[in-house]
Amino acid sequence: MAKILVVNKFYYRRGGDCIYTIDLVGLLQSHGHDVAVFAMQHPETLQTPWNKYFPEEVKFGLGTSSFKAILRPFGTADVIQKFNALLDDFKPDIVHLNNIHSQLSPVIAEVAHGRGIKVFWTLHDHKLLCPRYDCLRNGTICEQCLDNLHNVVKHKCLKKSYIASFIAYFEAKKWNRDRLEKCTDQFIAPSQYMLKKMKSGRFTSPKITQLYHFVDEKKYENVDYKKEDYYCFVGRLSPEKGVATLIEAVAQLPYKLKIVGDGPLKEELITKVNKNAFVEFLGFKSWEEVKTIVGKARFIVVPSECNEVLGLVALEALCLGTPVLGARIGGIPELIEEGFSGMTFESRDVEDLKVKIEMMWNARFDYEALAEYSLQKYGSESYYRQLMNIYKQSV
Image (cartoon, rainbow, N blue to C red; front, top):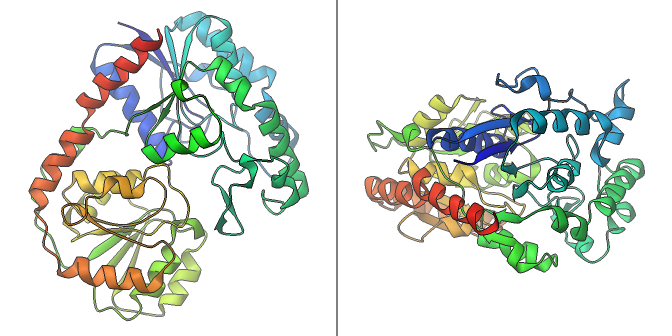
């Protein structure tokens, strides 16, 4: 059995990359692998036998630690020292990277590769292609940095700041495609969309494998598939998630919408709703609460306005037997079979979204069949077999 070191900058249930990382550790352990974890310290970090190796937390912004935060993306001595100590102790056969830029940096890929350890890297965002992670500029999709990295400075893409944008530019220059390919045995793209995007960024095709994310089937037990009269949105309340467009579309619709999540747009959105009795803000919820809310919803809406690498919320909903109305952007449409698992609409198009909500409300789906099909397609056992094949082809 291979010894596997799983790496992500955060190790608590913060976002999709963190949930995937935690579930991956559990999956590998359930199959008898000896698994270690490397992440950054944080008050919410899950306890593991390896926490003593985690480098201290850095926060990006003004303050006494700002200088250390500026240096961290380029590979600092404390990260290298802690990572080497873990490698010495654990002696992994494989290092499986996830989100590592900025707080940990790709220096750990070079360290592992330099010691003859195989390195695999699951991609959760566009950081290898875009210095600001999301291929957005002023709220619209932008891919200019695929041709010229200096555009990140020209347009002040990071926090509308020349300083922040210069740091992102130099980070991207240091961790360029050639350097990353040399220390990575295989990049794992969670969608066909991301596979094509990596190729358009001139990453070498044989270095990239497509493999959809997975779900832990145990989390989807005891679902009765009885739906109630509401639909929902689950996610961060921020501009790129499209929730403002959703609010605009539902203003005149007589259907109950439950919004789960928190974020910078929350107060503005609550004001915009203006006591609309058909819209309810529920705030942040635990997985068990989300499972109940999404499981009983007639459908969920994923109205993203950025190129999502895949869309974990949509995948989770499908495995609960809940259809998805998703924006035709990024990897989201790959999860939706029109008429069977949901529908799609043109991202940012308020009228199209409104019409499709009405159609979804009046449509009929076989919820149990949808859950059964999705759990089989995205289940952990199938994922494990495919992941082991990827490992073996490079080991």
